[in-house]
Image (cartoon, rainbow, N blue to C red):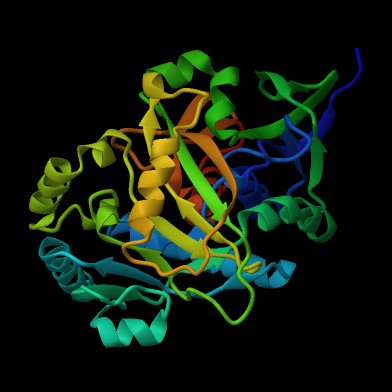
Length: 385
């Protein structure tokens, strides 16, 4: 039998979480190889808004992790030359209960030293001229958020990591067996001191029993992308509205959230049935990314629902004035998430770590989580543990 090809670290999955682990490991001077089962990463890492969204993480450890992730992201984006825009974000409130939740959230955030600001309609119009101002009661401004093009960064980071940090990539090479320190990828044996499994929803193919015991659930979302808008029409900040307040964990401590949630369930039960809330971001090509919905486990079908798109676009029209909006592409994606935990770090064998369950926060948390996991393993635990 051929002798295995040896590396310090093997990363399974070339989505954003795997790429972030590869970058953090290579920065330490380690010899890293990344395996991706497809010819290019095509999962949840490219089927999202491209929002680096610290405001969406609860105050405390997760917000700090998101900010650490953003700092690393900005270094990588600048070094690799990828398009990105430091847009900030606006949460828009058109109903009394939505405005009250924003006031409560703003006060809690300011008490913790966060840089947020409540704005009236006039200030919103100056920052985001595409926002509908009729009936707008309040908006929460955060300067932290950044927009990237997920297709560009996920496709381009492997090339940059290979050129700048010597990371080896094997695309079209599924890992079929892990028996540390050995793993089989394609027909070739490899060996690595540590193996990091970051393959998202498909981790269940390698460790089905482990994931079944973990409590992870699968989530399907539907999204759309518009035709490109030419300069100078830009929406400016990343945008969310009242439905997001009941979806984002950031707002869960607001006393008025329960009344808002009850009102939405009473007025629009279909929005809860399909987990619909609406975000919109504009990439460097001028395209709007619009979504999304949330269906879980047994409710997931391979067929997308036209009514979900209609509800998303109908709600978008209540807060955004997009001229001659035309949908150029639509898709669905799936990811794994845990009902109560923001992510899972599983240890199926010595030297093997499975990092999964980041849900819809993969882009926001990827680099911070990889930094935390790699530092925790390499700086604290002895080799082989």
